[in-house]
Image (cartoon, rainbow, N blue to C red; front, side, top):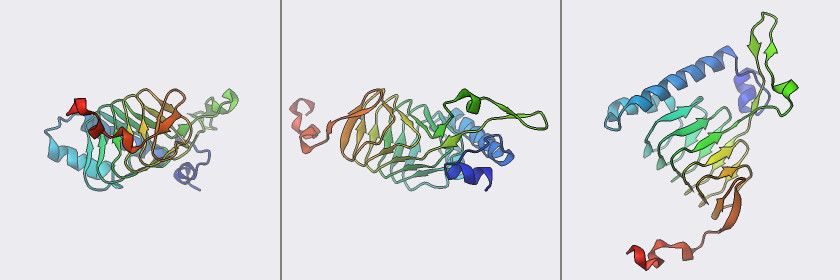
Length: 205
């Protein structure tokens, strides 16, 4: 298996592999270019999006700045929106459903480092260069989800459809469909029901 195949299969892999390093460097460069453009630079931003995010559906928008490790490992559904300072370390696959909205300062982090320092510390190759081993777990976010500001989602987590994740949450475990969840670590607070409709809040109208 190539190092990229190992990565996508959830196996231990060498992130210093030449091909992976080249792919990350390209993604980081494109992210920086996107982040430096104003929202009025629609054509220039569109060209970067075409190159960086081939697996996306219609109605795709990110305010920026952004940071992705690969871009090509993330799949976006329709009507995707991300506010400022989005970080997606898509070493493993990131799959986002339709109508996903991400608030400011969201981080989706698939990469996982070993707990034991003996397995985490740099390793010396025969030529004297250094490398480290890590692995990644996919992140899946279902349809019609809103992640509020400063949410972090860790590798291996699935967030079900119709969920709201409260501000400042660190999501370490799966969240079922149609739930409001919050906290560090994030936990289910309650189900979302028709009683949550803003149309019932007369003061808003």
